Length: 337
Image (cartoon, rainbow, N blue to C red; front, top):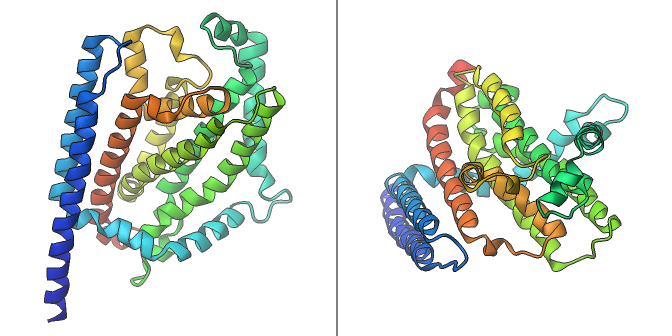
């Protein structure tokens, strides 16, 4: 009897959720269709509208036909939020336990990397003059750091989240433990280091003479974007790597390629429009550009309408796919690990 009532209650909630979802999605579609940029090329605008509507329709269909499977993961994460926070703090402390400098090692490697790239690309290759030639009047070390800070978090959290099931295999085998919390624990654990370096980035910006502005608050929004992107990718990766261990090496190679395919050390404005479109398909281009505009620019994220819309549609789609793959494969984790 209780099961029947629960099922009937979920049916009502499901209908309400679908109505709300499609109302929001149709609103998004109308915004895309009626959005106008008088300075943009009409043909390019039309193509963006078509792509945006197709992505919306694709995501909407995935959500509508798989709502029963998709609701499980967010519900489990919300119900175990206190446990997630506690385990994330313990995971961060455990990562550097036993070393003399402890968590300082989390800060040392990124600092050395920034200094190395700064010397090579600015002092030796003269990237500062190339930036100035393309109309970007930002000190190169600041330009570089604003790109590397989100990249450090993305690469670290992506690898940590992917390996969560393998690292905590003893918990996976426990019947009563909600293994869905493991990837987000690793991602939040990496977030502590990201917060520290974001603070360093803000301090550097102020030391270079930029005045504090309300635009700097957008770094919180772009960090949230970064967190959600990693979360969306991690549930797919951590499920697949249990059965296909070579995925770890593939992701490592992908990160090496991705670093150079993301405008971290170079300026995207130096390329033609055709190449810009390709580079902007990379969701990290949106985040890296957002970090720079938050620190040194005077633009709100909603001014980049198509980039913002594309990013969130892509991230939600990736999360839906990752959640479905994770739910389907997790029942077999204990047999393999």
